[in-house]
Length: 106
Image (cartoon, rainbow, N blue to C red; front, side, top):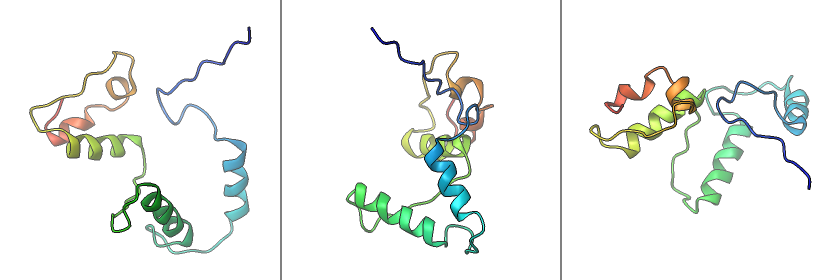
């Protein structure tokens, strides 16, 4: 029986990226484009996300990292008196450094 390599999702900065992603980064490395989500790649990604969600009038925002993304999502989804349950080894318990407490959760 073949064994599968154990996947580690504790942090997005522990591993390199897939070869296909690196190839695209190298191919577009010297492009000049607008910043702050106004470039053609971000606009295309926004359209793909809206289409996948079947929400053409939705707003899509890109964040710089997982901690910021978790904080925004948790603040939007949970009431201030609600909390997150995670394993002691879970990323949110180990690496988030209390970021979710910005929205009142713990």
